[in-house]
Image (tube, rainbow, N blue to C red; front, side, top):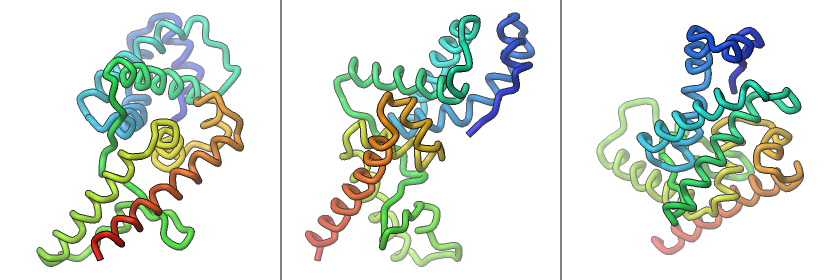
Length: 196
């Protein structure tokens, strides 16, 4: 999550280079990370962020704070990513740096799955296989479920903001995240059953 001061927004509206730089610095990391998780390619995420930033600057003169600034920003980034997928005719990928799954009703972050002490080569190989299965399962999620999951788990946005960004009711946003976690759990369990 990020906060942008009204002074920075006003400075951007006045075309201040200093304000542009400040806004870029605040938005770059969270928006690039969001786009990276949506599309799975860092270079593409950085390109989409550049276009997102241009659209933000173009839209700032007429932007009215009807919603949170972050909601507006993530909506622009999301729409650009979805447009890219439509043109490429392929589904988005995901990175493996923070993949999740559910165990006993608790969401587990990838960082929690990696042991802190130096693991043996066999343990590393087993972990690599688990990460790969998890990444594959996330990539098999539909775009709608994946974006809800990314916004909630990786960006930490509240359901109300996810609903605004994706244009759905809050209950639907909650359902999509829940359903995505359930799908991941089923896919991972299915993979384990096939390997047994």
